[in-house]
Amino acid sequence: MTVVHAIFAPGLFTNGPVQTAALISATVALVCAPAGLFTVMRGQSFAGHAFSDITATGGSAAALAGTGPLAGFVVMGLAGAGLMGALGVQRQRGRDLVTGITLGAALGLAALFLYLTSTASSTSGTTVTVLFGSVFALSSSYWPVVAGLGGAALASMLVLWRPLLLSTVSPELAAARGVRLRLSETAYLASVAVAVALAALTVGAILSTALLIGPSAAGLRFGKTPARACFWAVGFGVVSLWAGIVLAYDSYDWPPAGRGWPVSFFVVALVTGFYAMAQMLGRAPARLRGAS
Amino acid sequence: MADALVQVPGPQARALVEAPLVLQVERLSVRLGGREVLHDVSFGVAAGELTGLIGANGAGKTTLIRTVLGLQPASSGALRRASVGYVPQKVTLDPDLPVRARDLVALGVDGERLGTGWRSPRRRARVDELLSAVGASHLADARVGTLSGGEQQRVLIAHALAREPQLLLLDEPLANLDPPSTQAIVRLLALLARSRHMGILLSTHDINPLLPFMDRVVYLAGGLAASGTTEEVVRSDVLSALYGHHVDVLRAHGRVIVSVADEHREEGCDAPEEGDATLHALASAPQPSRGDNEGTADAGCELSAEDERPTP
Image 1: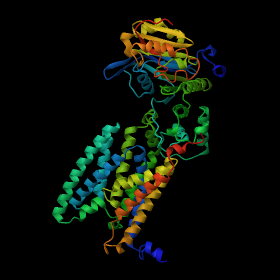
Image 2: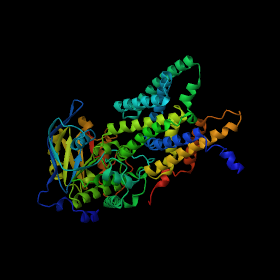
Image 3: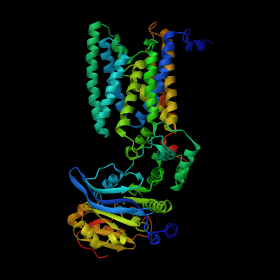
């Protein structure tokens, strides 16, 4: 009993903020899995990271304007998705260059907004909340918004599943089949933007890439098909977030006493752990050959 | 080889009645970046026939195929075609993608549709049937990225066949294949053309692997095209008219060597050494047994440059 109590501290399951955090983070993991899966399969992890930086700009702008961070995350993310889709840079080198320049500009703006906010209100709390987040800080009023946005992004990924998979395998094959590459790419980027915005809400803008990419990259080592990899990714994401919440709750009893450790640290550490484990245990592609 | 000729009826066995055309190209011209890549190109592909689209690198083969597909607009001319399947050039399949051969073929059945698609016995049976048609049933559950070039080509052909096209376009499907795989793919395509009564247009820079199975040839050079049977087109006078200067056509041991004069070297294929090109091509020409020329750098490159006219 003491061991169980040591892990699941008394009051954990009846704590309001913990219940809200658990519900919201499970939703976020569900949305991040398919978006992250395609980001990894298409080799666009860098673009995924750019979204987290763009999101930081949105969150800091929202903080300066005195509104909740989520609106800023989502609006800036979707604007970024629209821009990337409109530019439609297909070559890897050009794409990375445009992405790098965009994220540099975005972080510069974030620095400005965060500076103005912290000098105006003389708190450094905003900076930490926007960049590193805290799932415990979310009130239950966020849940309907998160469910609505997440549901839309998830539905969009499921609707685009086959054309996106075909264009991931070969853009030429997809184009020959009449898949509108630019349109499907833009819709997919919008879903990634929403997934990153929701991840930013739970673990902070800077760490959101880890939640997007990590569980999916680990899932791809286990799943023999994209669909199965996606289920693995949901599992890794949910377990990382929930275990992170439990550990963060426990850490109030850890030294330095009475303050607790940041939940985002635990979540990202667990995601990284799952990825490392998947690299070691997951089947290497060469060993996935069939009967031959 | 002899077995194959019995199994697969060659050009000799073609029906005397003209088969319906599944592709008709009339006086087609295509401009790319201000340059006329194709000029007044006319030819047809009939159902049940294997047609080779022959030309050196840069002759306009890919442009022609993309124009037929509707991915590239024509500047003038007319084009009529039946339903089409397509195997693009240089499809690089990532070995890290969790996509099995059967998944890629399933994407050929309904890959452009929205939604995730539901697993159904009918869909699975259809995929199994397509894989078996290209002799790739044993590869069904392997990741496509881990397959060899020839195996990937079979899976891509199954993907392209999924909608029962009347016309199949393949862009350089033989590039980077070793001689045995090359022969196996050409034999498979000839068999598919006959058994499915489908027209096939296959582009390649090397005419030789196609010779035993090809019904017609469309020869591209300098933006112009000549078409007909191999005997009608691959002749010194026809190709000289096409290239606009003297071209030798040499035949040895069932192989053809098209020899383009030196000042027009860029129209030939990439010969490795200046003066050695012709000798090299001739040396590798008589090779009835497989694997003879595997070690040579430009095996199968028969559009060679020359300094002097060689004597066969």
